[in-house]
Image (cartoon, rainbow, N blue to C red):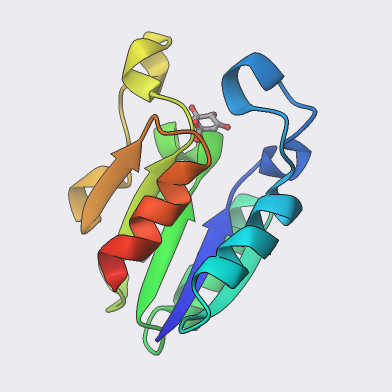
Length: 137
Ligand code: DQA
């Protein structure tokens, strides 16, 4: 099973960014743990701060991979382009968020991803990614 985690803008700063909300662990550290926990999965990781690069990656993997775990970060709330990309592909997408976006500012309550995602997992910290992975298995 081939699954990719795609992270959007500012998630490269996990571990030092707003640690009260996002925690102190870097994604690279967490990703190593995920790889060890799920040896049966061919796991990949891609991060970009650039909307177009995220769309290009979604298109690239979206017809051959078994699953996409997508945290589009702030683009979740703004990007019709990422929403359209998810509509266009065949690979199922699980939307994840580290924080509970519904308990935060109102502009975080809307997602351009959710309507076309297979499911949404949010608010469990980095564990949200693990729960998404489990749901694919
Ligand atoms: C986030 C929530 C978004 O609102 C925010 O812009 C992020 C991270 C999360 O994982 O909790 O950058 O997607």
